[in-house]
Amino acid sequence: MPDSRLPRLQRIFRDVLDEPSLQLAEDFSTAAHPEWDSVVMVQIVLAVEQEFGCELEMAQVAEIKSVADILRCLP
Image 1 (cartoon, rainbow, N blue to C red):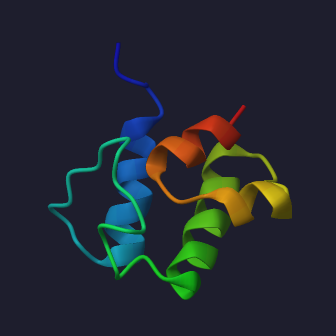
Image 2 (image 1 turned 90 degrees about the vertical axis):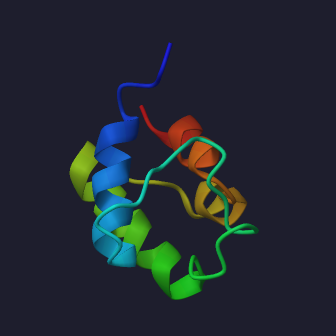
Image 3 (image 1 turned 180 degrees about the vertical axis):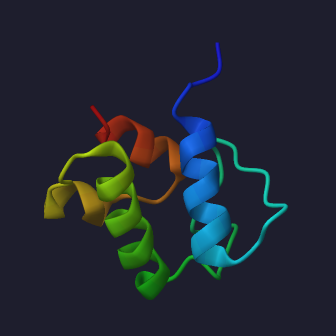
C-alpha cells in the first residue's frame, strides 16, 4: 500500500526543487539527484517540519539519504 504521506512530500520536493512535474517515489535519493544538496536538504527539512508539525532530530537529518528515510522520521 502506498504511503499516504508521499503526496505531501511530493509537493514539498516540487516546490523546493522548482520542478512542478517531479514524480516522487520512496527510492528518490541524494545519490541519484545531485540537485539534492545540503542547502536543499535544509529547505526540505524545514518544509517537512512545518507540513507535518514535527521537529526532526539532527541525528535523524544526518542519516537522510532518500525519501524513504524521511518517511521513517515522520510520526
